[in-house]
Structure formats: structure tokens, C-alpha cells
Image 1 (cartoon, rainbow, N blue to C red):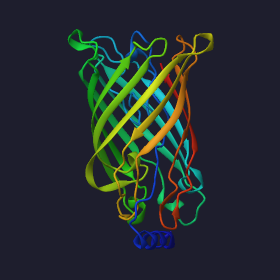
Image 2: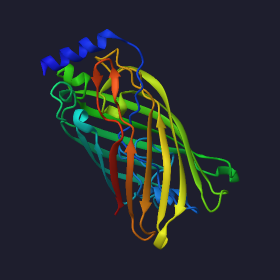
Image 3: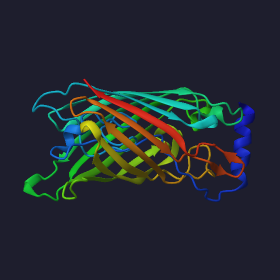
Length: 307
């Protein structure tokens, strides 16, 4: 392992030229019904357990009765990161209160890849605690153009990836974000969901790439198109985009680019509180001269279930 770290440091020092890097451990877009978008998001948990797309949140929270807590929603996410990064499994549980607040916990489980030089940089798993609160409800003040606007946070602990593996330390990192989401129903019979936001973060690739040297502001967003499928099912096709901090800790000459995900989500039946996600992630390839993470076009899938 010491040889692997030394080799990477040497390769990183050779050049600081930007290298194209698209990465997101993830999938797609949150699910919704035309009449009440939030009601579909009740079972649409993202990669870190928040209501939203596979990686980025939306402004919606878990629907709950007024002044009552929500019955928990559980999810499982899987990403095959390739021979270098290994595989990632995420288990989440999330609840909410008063149709305005949600909170939950996610545990990442990681299986190390097979590359003897690079795979040791991704070890163990880590914890994620998250929360979100609605500031302005969609269509407030009887304004049909008004989006749902929310703020939230992520706190990750026991992060040992990349910089933590190099320094032999568990680390932690955080996100704070502001997000707006709007369901456009005028485009019948194909509603469209659009979300956009900004987050302050010191996490690289949501903790999968460890920490970053500084706390920076990064933009993110998604767009999704809803179709009626056979047997009263719903199919959603979408794309997700998220800026990443440029350099991970301990690897200052590695360049991390904006990440993108193309995927589909299926709700088999309105009566079945289950979401099925499949997608292809354009993962990291060469991030510096001689350093290839071999994770382009990696498959991922997810399940979310509302109890």
C-alpha cells in the first residue's frame, strides 16, 4: 500500500493539466404524480437518503400528515465502480414531520477493487446524516410559477477514502445546500420536473472521493420527463448534473470535473410503494497522467420502498 501511495503522488506531481472527469455514484430523478408531485417523492430517496435524484436532492420532502411524523422510507443503492474503485452499496432510512421536514441516516458499504496500486485508496465505508426543511411551498401565494424552495445539510463521518487512506485517518466532511424544484404540468401528456441548486461542500464526490482542502460552492440540477407506461406504470427518463470541487485532499494535481448521470426510474403501480431505478454512470477515467480509474460507463441500480 505504501508503494501505491508513493506511485500516485509521483504521477500527480508530473502534471497539473485538467483532465476530463465525469463522475456520480448514481442514478436518476425523483418520481412524481401530476396532481401532487410531493406524493411520489415519498418513496424516491437519493444516494445519501434524501428525497431527490440518485445523488442530488430536490426541494420536496417526504409527505406527512399535518403535525405528524412520516412512516419511514427505506432504500438500497448499488454502484459497480469498476476494477479500481470497487463496488458501493448504500442502505438508507428516512422520515419526516409536518410535510416540511425530513431527516435520516445512510450507511455506505464498500468492497475494494482489484487494482493493487490504486484500489487501496478506497477502503471501508462511512456514515451520512442528513436533514432538509422547506422554506417556500410550491405554488405559494397562489402563484403557479412559484417553485418549492428548501435548504438542507449532509454530515459524513468515518470517511477513509483517498486522503484518509493516504494519511491513515478517519475524516469527516459536510454539505449545506439551497435547492428549488418545479413541476411543469402544462406540457401534457409529458410533465417535466426541473431542479436547480447550490451547495457548499468540502466533500469530493459526496465523500466517495474523500475530502477537499477547502469549503467551496458548487452548482447542481436535474431535468426529468414523465411518461405513462403499460399497466398503469410510470416511467421517468432524466439527466442529472453536479459540479465537483476541483481537487481532492492529498492529491492537489488531480482534476475532478462536473459529473453527469443518465437513467430511468419505473413505478410499477400507483398502489405499490416501490421505485425501481436503472442507469449508466459516466465515471472517472484518466484523472492525471498515468492514473486511470477505469470507471467509465458503469452500471447502477436502486430500490426505494415506503412502509
